[in-house]
Image (cartoon, rainbow, N blue to C red; front, side, top):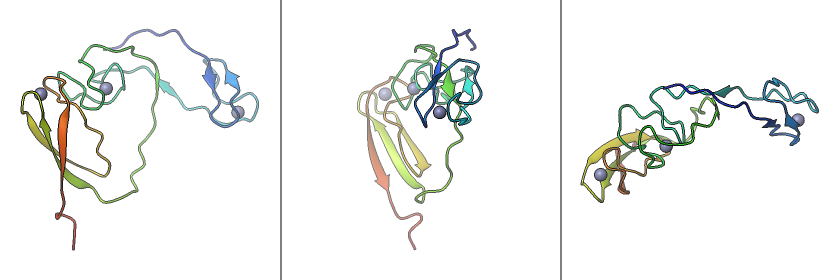
Length: 128
Ligand SMILES: [Zn+2]
Ligand SMILES: [Zn+2]
Ligand SMILES: [Zn+2]
């Protein structure tokens, strides 16, 4: 789903100067400003994480199709960090269960009903 946005002024993350919506570089310190994306195809309208067909966002609990659809910074996630850990998620409301294997787990809501989940780490897979 794509929507049209009012372009907003953007603040330089380095010096704090407000730059025009179409600025590519900060007018004060020349810092390259990140590209803003408005592509919400298959994404949560609130936190812009990929929904993958879920009825509710796993990360913020927003229902699919809801949210403010603000332009977001399309930042490539850093791939270095701690080893990924298997985690089991169980919905406290409907009992839906799923596992994920990530370095940092930020799935906090049930993709089916939006309820909060219990997260259990399942260590062992990557230990020597
Ligand atoms: Zn700046
Ligand atoms: Zn979300
Ligand atoms: Zn649920």
